Length: 59
Image 1: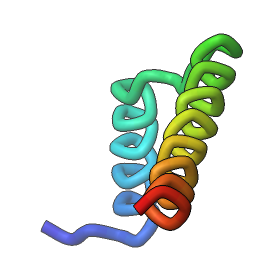
Image 2: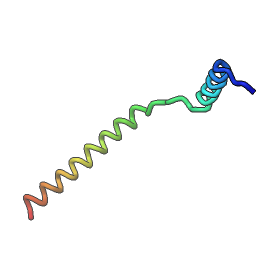
Image 3: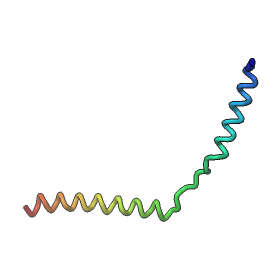
Image 4: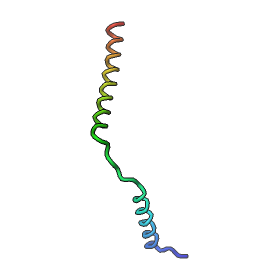
């Protein structure tokens, strides 16, 4: 059985289309998730800096 390059390209294109259909499309995160994430990052940074300040100033 002889496979021509055209047949192989066609088969490869069909496989790529099938895989693309299986993958769910990307849906971005809601804005409140992003805002909450940044607020939590700021809280953690301030907690770390506050702990460092407390250890230097009061110990």
